[in-house]
Length: 333
Image 1 (cartoon, rainbow, N blue to C red):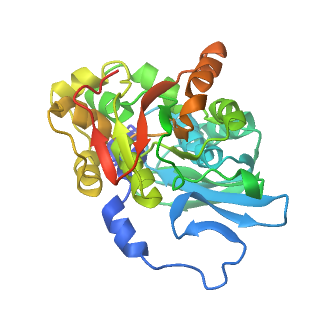
Image 2 (cartoon, one colour):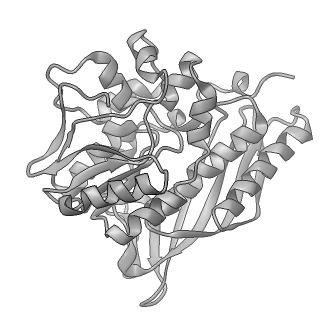
């Protein structure tokens, strides 16, 4: 039987459509009746949010991609994590998920069963239920979820509302694409890609963050670019926490399919920054951490709270007046 990754041309979030082309394609596409659509495409965010009443809104997202690992259960767990994390990035809690699946008929049914079972386990860990889905035949395997969650209308986290003076934090290290492509510490990369952002979101919530997004296929610089562009601010990146082996692999010339597309989408000011550090910032992440903009006077308390609970967090920069993304001369942290 062929390995899962041998059946794909690009797996994980590196398979995302070009952000620049997607932005052009969706420009001006807004539903006519949008009174209760609190978050849609103007501007787009990590999920759509629709207001039901004064106390409740639904969060709706979907995400799927080809395999980036060969083990079916690991693939299902990563894909589920990636989709569920969009709800956490909006400040919401997942309720219900449906599978989106496409597999070659030649694959043994136990392969599909392992994908589904692992996804179900991860959905339950997120506090939701996997209640069905849709499966089609395809020569390239793909899997993901459509997820519905809830959020209070006043508790939505957008990526477009960062304020000058905010501190910028990241809740997972960067480099999953590089590590998988370069055959580095894959076990460590998988550990992070199967870590739900639920607990990180719960720790962030009491600090009333100004803006939040999750770092996935557009890389740290791409998602920082979205935060800056849509918020009318400048993001200054001063540190990038690398995943084990990621910086060394980038220095050796390893790149993923998303690297070029992400550079085209999100140009940055980066005088004096080493190429391997830029490659780290542009690396397409799968099921990455939360990128959080929080008032500077809450920064130390937020960091202490994460450390007290044994959760990873890194201060990666700040929000300033201006536009665009600026990268410091020394960014590996």
